[in-house]
Length: 277
Image (cartoon, rainbow, N blue to C red):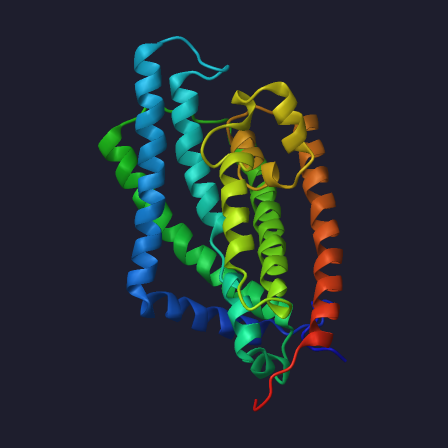
């Protein structure tokens, strides 16, 4: 059996992956400078968006693109937290593990490579989320932005969208890392993905400020499900039917990427070699 393949079923033991998650959590504190720079980058990104839209609303006190100032401020803060939960991943390291031959150390263990990286991702997301909540609370206290607080049911409806988005991005990140079977450097494809996310995932601005034809094009991609849709659910911009439809679309993309990841892993493993390991 191919133990590097993704999970065979619910019989997987949870304890070993929980242990892996704890180790990954500890590693996050071991490389403090890298972690601190990532958090600083997130804060600067939030502040850039905040002061940009603050300046725009200072010129025009009326609503812009269907957003009031309080709603846009809410979008900026909530999307910042969503980005932390969804876009912080450790599976980005998988390509280097493949190229160095260290993947063999995982393959010979009684673990699934797929779940090995999920456990590491989960630990990284929890760690970043805790820091993000503290940072956002501090910035909220210092900046005192006008803010739209949603009805409680919409907060609950955001949770499945958030989990779906996190798993979908894990699959996307995992796929890009698997390109390491064919190339020693996946930096260029990942950089392209990063730039693409800035304009199609709703990280810089709400996607509905774009022209309709661009919105339609982007809606055919999986990227709005990552940040834009969970944030819009929080802001009560969707009806229950709209939320259900978007969750269904996100689930479809998950199934597509599961199939793509399985196929890529199977073909890539046939090419894999680690002489001397």
